[in-house]
Amino acid sequence: MADMTRILILYYSRHGATAQMANAIARGVESVEGAEAVLRTVPEVSANCEKTAPSIPDSGAVYATLDDLKTCHGLALGSPTHFGNMASSLKYFLDNTTELWFSGALTGKPAAVFTSTGSMHGGQESTLLSMMLPLLHHGMLITGLPYSETALRETTTGGTPYGASHVSMQQQTLSDHEKTLCKALGARLANIAKRLQGL
Image (cartoon, rainbow, N blue to C red):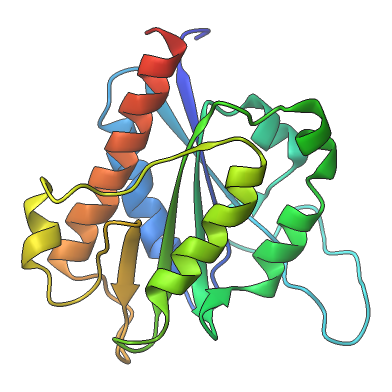
């Protein structure tokens, strides 16, 4: 359908927590009439040498392409926290989006970010902010989570106004508040993208 609002949920997940968040965000996107969630991931970066990953991973979402970014109406970008920053696999993918930057393919599209950490003070907010930087360079419109989302005021686990977050603390399962905030972020992003499309 030509009028569908396509929201790309692009993430890297090593142990599965960020993938769970991506799926919850997708449910939020698809709760908005006329919105479609497209899940994509990025391959692992090799520590030994640059290698070519198979074009389809063994499990989970397929690998993202630049065309996925070009054709989306909005983007949710997610990564686990690695020393207060996004994972190198996601950064490597973003570092190769220069042609989209030159063409302005992402300019004016809404974007949101999400992350997961192993501990409460593991650098969630700095990671979310680091993921926003390349999106701002691309001219994207950043949206977060407003405090009108009750779960943001009540959470004792993850959740920030900068974007959805998860604290695993040795457990992979998202808390109820984290699930609620992921869904809210997806719905917010889809609604903004629809308005920007004039739908």
